[in-house]
Amino acid sequence: MKKTLLMSLALVIVLSAVLLAGSEDRIGTAGAQELRIPSGSRGSAMGGALVASAKGTEALFWNPAGAAAESGTEAMFSHLQYFADMKLEYVAVKTTIEGFGTIGVSAKVLAIGNILKTTWNDQQGAAGEYFNPTYSVIGLTYARQLTDRVAFGATGYFINERVEQVTAHGVAFDFGFTYVPNWRGLKFGVVVKNFGPEMKFDGPNFGNSVIPPGSDPNSAAKDLRSQNASFELPSSVQFGIAWDPLNRPNEKNNVEFATVFQSNNFSQDEFRGGLEYSYSDMFFLRGGYAGSNQSNYMFGPSFGAGVKMHWGATNVMLDYSWQKTDFFTGDNQYFTVKMAF
Image (spheres, helix red, strand yellow):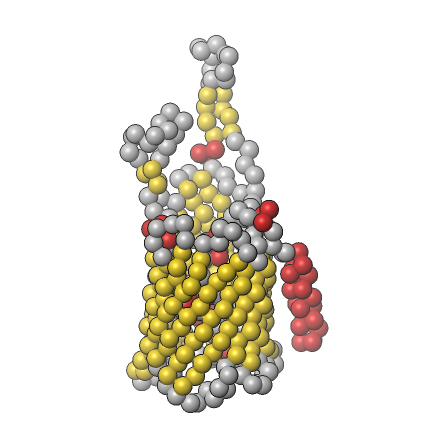
């Protein structure tokens, strides 16, 4: 049964990689971009190269299979000061149920900020009115160790986007595997992200009552409604490798290298790499880089640090990361707190 499941899901992932070949022509064709915004300081500091080595609550975003890597209960809160004065809040909780697997819940809210409101009759926004779009995503995750080396995880997302009186709702799914061969410190991971049906905006703001041009000015106004096109989700397939060259988990000094190849349906492919150094499993330094052949790719190098504190049976992790961005004011800064029980 497990072997059949593994083969079936592996086939789905391979076919998805073929269908999602990145293309310059598809840049900007997918919506619901909040699904792509990273959550948590560790992964962002390592350039997003966390597909093979994500664990705990951070795995709920990067690769749900990694949530099964550690037992127990963990909670995480992350604040992102995003470029162009946008903000993202993320909270996640995961726990292990013996004999069943690991379950997790996550919630993400993207606040775009105040935007000057313009209308057909006030195209300069002289009225001084503003609106504040808000996008939110709620995720439910299940992960399980299929064997002592292979783990599987899946996440279902409920997406809500609101701009004034216009909304869009949708669902998306992540499916991931991790494989730890217990050989030379290597780890492998693959994840299919943001698969789901197309979304579409709708609401009262798409309708208007007007007198058709050329009609009698005294004639009754007619209700007109815009026909709105649907849009795809930003789907991708990611393949990751992580390597601990020292392969000595109980030693004071540990190093991990990680890399990811990402095939997108909405732009050209991406390549990411990262490095983490830890001392006594208490102090952490990280760095990473994300790149693409896309001419206007906006992300660059990233750096971060963290400290883990032990209070009895509770571990508290404080993390920070910074990521360079181009074309917009302000770089990305993450602040994360994790508690493991």
